[in-house]
Amino acid sequence: MNKNQTLILGDTLAIAIVTIIGFATHGEVGAGSPSASIILPRMLAAFIPLTLGWFLLAPWLGLFQPEIISNLKQLWRPVFAMLFVGPFAVTLRGLILNAAIIPVFAVVLTATSAFGMLVWRGIYFLLNRKERK
Image (tube, rainbow, N blue to C red; front, top):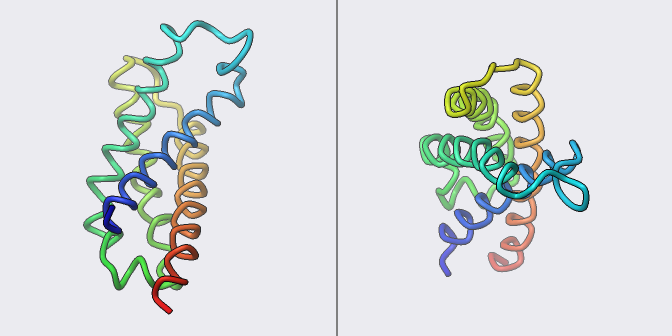
C-alpha cells in the first residue's frame, strides 16, 4: 500500500470513528440503542457528506503531497480543512435528511472532526518519521 492509499484509508477511518463516537455519546450505539435500520442511515447521512467534503478539499490544500504530510509544522492543514468541511457536511446532511441545520451541531462536528483528523495525521506523521530517517 502506498502512502496516499494509507492516508485515504486512514482519513476515511478517522471520519468513521469520529462519526461512531458522536453517535455513541448520544447513546445511539450499543445495547439499548435504536435498531441499526434507524441508526445506519443517519450515520451515513453524517459520514458521507463529511467524507465527500474532505476528499474534495484535502487535495486542494496539499494534504496528500509528500512535502506537506512529512512536515510536522503542516499539521494545521487538516484542522483548517475541517473548518470548511464540517459546515459543508452539516448543510448537506440537513438537505439529505430534510432536517434543520443546527449551528451548534456544525461547530461540534467541525471541532471533533478536526481533532480526529489531527490525531490520525499526527499518528501517520510519527509512524512515517522513522521511515524517513
